[in-house]
Amino acid sequence: MSHPASSMKACIKEYDQQQEYFFAEGCFITELSNSSDDPEVSIARARLEPGKTTRWHHLRGTTERYVVQQGEGSVEVGDLAPRRVVAGDVVIIPAEVRQRISNVGAGDLVFLAICSPRFTTEVYVDLEE
Image 1 (cartoon, rainbow, N blue to C red):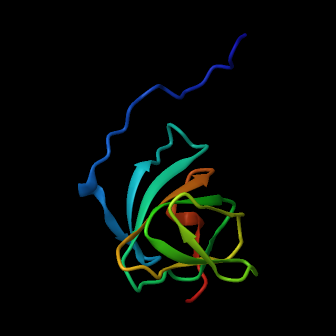
Image 2: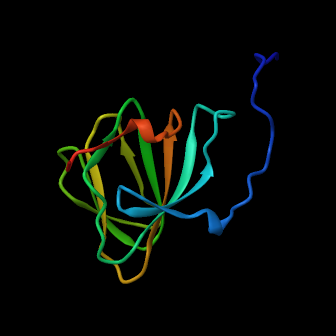
């Protein structure tokens, strides 16, 4: 079986907690994998402090998936009623669909944000401005 030539190279990206930064959306982000070497997908670790809610936003041309790792949240996507989410839950957010998530637990809410194609700041649209 032949595979088409690809510019992608096998690699291991080590987790570096020191790379965490605060994003305008209202949560802390650590980019786990987000580079032009792998344009089809990005993976970020998002951390939302107790009592906080991200801003209403959508992603232009980019589908996002939340994979909840720890904590307890309430997520709002499009016209769906708010839903409680906990570790193991997956939220699928199509491109251009409004979204926000709140931390309703006592500790940090941590989730992976997996975007395709990969996330760039240009696709982020703040709906509260």
